[in-house]
Amino acid sequence: MRRLIVAFFLSASAFLGALRDVAAATPADSESHFVYQEGAGKVTSVPIVRRYWLSRIIHPLAHVDPRLDPRLMHAATIAEERANARSRLRCWHYVKEALLAAGAVNSYPKTAYAIEAGQELTRNYGFRRLPVRDPYAAPVGAVLIYGTREGGGHVEIRTRDGFVSDYHSKDRCAYPLVAVYAKFNS
Image (cartoon, rainbow, N blue to C red; front, side, top):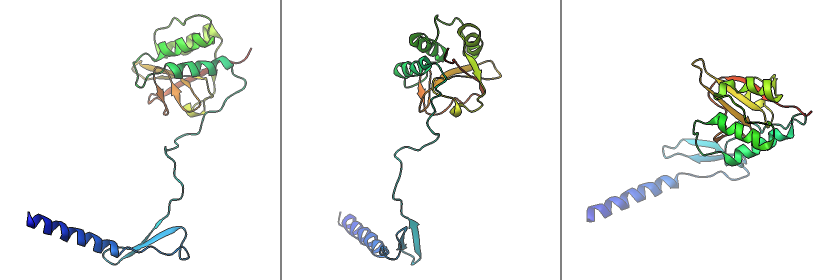
C-alpha cells in the first residue's frame, strides 16, 4: 500500500512539473493563437477557436419554390410527423399516405414499388419531372426517386432540412438519383 501511495505522488508531481512548462502568451502578443512550451522545450502555438457549431452543417437548407403546389409542403410536414427513427422498408407506403393526407393526390396510388412511383405520379396525378440532378437542390415538397441496377429503389420527400419517407434523415439516400417530381399550382 505504501508503494502505491509513493507511486501516486511521484506521478502527480511529474504531471504538475509538465504543466509548469506550459505558458500562455499575453493577449498583446497574439489574439488569434495560444502559445505554449511543450515539456521538451519546443514552443508551439495553436489557433484559438472563438465560435463553433453544435452540429456540423453538411448542406444548406432547401428552398421553397412558390410555383409548387403548397399541398406538397404540407405532405412533407405530415411525413415528418409520421416518420420513424429507423427505416421500416416501407418508404413508398409512407410517402403515398402523406401525399393522400395532404390532398396532393386524390386517390391512393396503386403501384407497389418505389421505382414505379414517378411513372404513376406523372400519368395519374399531374406531377412533372424537374430538371434537378442533385437531391439537395430539390425544392421543399418534391418527391425524389432513387434506384439501383438490381431493381431496388427508394422514394422520399424533400423537407426543409433533409429528407423523409418512413424515416427522417439529414442525408440523401445512398442509391443513385433517378428523378425528382413535383406538382405545380393550377
